[in-house]
Each structure stands twice: as structure tokens, then as C-alpha cells.
Image (cartoon, rainbow, N blue to C red; front, side, top):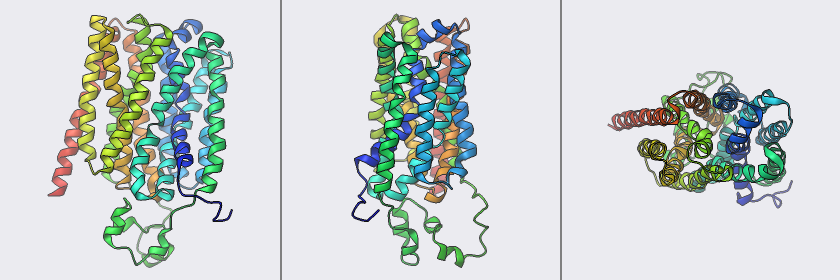
Length: 432
């Protein structure tokens, strides 16, 4: 390919990044939007339905924790192709009428497809997108999850009326395949940024800081600098992640419990407890998706302007806690207005955490370690995502029902609030 054929990062690359984050979750959001029909047709309990999400996110967590460093060694194009092919395959398996076990297999494949997007898309941003646009793009591409929630929550219930929920999944399988074709073109025509070796010995501390990479890490990919530092450990030994990575992973885990306990059972709650139709029940998740997209872009802009990640996490935790209270009030009163307000609070807060976590990572982690560091934080979120639906399903099936479930969700956000306060205090001490 000639330099004439190459182009600066544009809407094509941004669409690919957003699509990579969106492809995997389509299956689970679609199943959640039609959960009432699935539970009735297959003859499973609410707790069994929760196992689909647990399988999905459990596979995603294991994949993120174990395959992150492997992803560091593979090309962007091969990893992106892996994401889209697995996402399409998972949706195709849902269309196979072979009982609950086939749905579990499909959910697991969907989870694996969600193991790589954060790491590989973060790496693409660091390698191909200029610094001034990078954090803003994080917010847009991280909103892919909510775009997926919006599309699946509207598409599946509407299609299910005519061709059933299996037919809806078969139709949706076309989406990842289209994204794969766009990816092939976009990555091959968008060049890498100037490499670090050309700047060895010339960058000032300020210039290195501007890249979002600490000064001592800014040239880790330069062979000349590696040769000048023989005392360092062999490059084959995995680098240890800083404490901030583990703290962000812990926050993602706790928040993830509340996020997916709400996402997976929100349409079912609307249909069963509030008397909504299947389509209107799906609309609750769609509304959360729309607000989540706006929220993620907004929070990313705040981060790009230098806002403290810890303070934003505290704000998000408090709003999410208020949302859990509103879900409880909606259940207690039966008033639909409280449900819609709770959905809005959920979209604004809990669904915006991911972009803050990823943007905070990009401030301290170099490109060479981004896939593995992102994998650890993503693994934390996915473990939380796996636990949330399972616990919520057990609670909903118990005498406590949804009322006890919303109390449990509120407890997770209270823990997030406390952890954010700890992070703020630690950061304050570090500046002294």
C-alpha cells in the first residue's frame, strides 16, 4: 500500500473501534430484552436465565485475565477479526433450536468476544490517533456497549413479534460481519503514528507527558534504548502492573455487579412487575443505552479536560446509588414514572464507569502494556458482570423478590462510593 492510499484517523476508524466494543454484547442485550418470552418458551427459572449472563461474563473475565498478554503479541487486524467472527457465531448458535445448553455455549462465545475489545482498541488509539483526539475517542468507542444495548433492546423485541427471538438473533448476526468488512479496510488504510525510535534522545519530559505515557516508559519500544539499559529485566518477563490498575479493577468489579444485575433484569422487571409490554420493556433498556452513550461521551470529555478520575468515580457511584433507590421506590409504589427516572440515573452513572476507568488507565500505562493492563481492569468488570445477574436471579426467585434485589444493587453502589473515597484520599496523599 502506498502512502497516498493511507489516511489520517477518521469516522471509519472510529466506527470500527465503537463496533468492536459493541459486537460482543449484542447477544446478551437481545436475550435480556426478550427474556420473558425465552423463560416461558424454554421453561426455565429467572435464576437459570441469569446463568446466561454469568456464563457470558465469566468467559469474558477469564479471557481478559489470561489472554491479555497474548493479545499484546498479535496484530490489531487479527484480534479485531477474532472479535467479530466470534460475535457472529454466538448469534448464529442462538438461532439453533437445541435447548438451554446451546444458549449457554453461545453466551460463552459472546463473552470471549468481549475479552479483547478494550485492550486492542486502546492500543489502536495509542498507536494511530493523535493525543489531542485520543481521550474524546475513548468516550465514543466505550459507548459502543450502550449502542449495542440500544440496538439490541429495540431490534430483538420488534423482530421477535414476527420471527421469534431465535430469528431475531439470526438477523442480528449480519451486524458483526459488516463491521468486519469495514475493519479490514479501515485498519489497512490508517497509518501508525511516528514511532518512538525516531525521537530517542530528543523528547523532553514535557513531551513525554503529553503522550499520556510516563517519561521512563515513553521509549520502551525503542531498540536503541533497550540496548542502553542491559541491567533491566529481560523483555520476555511480564511487567508488573502498578497499584492503580488493581484499584481500578476492584472498582470495576463492584460496580459491575450492580450494572449487570440491573441491565439483565430491568426489562423483565418492567414486564413482570410494572405491567409493560415486551416491546416497552425492551424500551427501558434502550433508553438506558441512549443515555449511556451520551454519558460516556460526556464523562470522557471531562477526563480530557483534566478531571480527576477518582472524583468522577465518586460522582458516578452516588448517582448510581440514587438510581437503585428509585428502582426500589418504583417497585414499592408501582408508579412507572419512578422506573423511567431510575433508568435515566442508571444510564447516566453506572453505564459511564467504563470510560472513566479506561481513560484513567491511558494516563499511566504505555502502549506496549496497554492490552494486558486493560485486560486486568476489564477482567474485574467482567467478574462483576458475571456475579451480578446470578445473584440477582437468585434474589428475584426468592420471597424477597425484586424489592430485595434493588436493595442488594444499592449496597454494591454504596461500596463503590466508599472505594472512590479511599482512592481520593490516596491520591491526595500522593501529591503531598
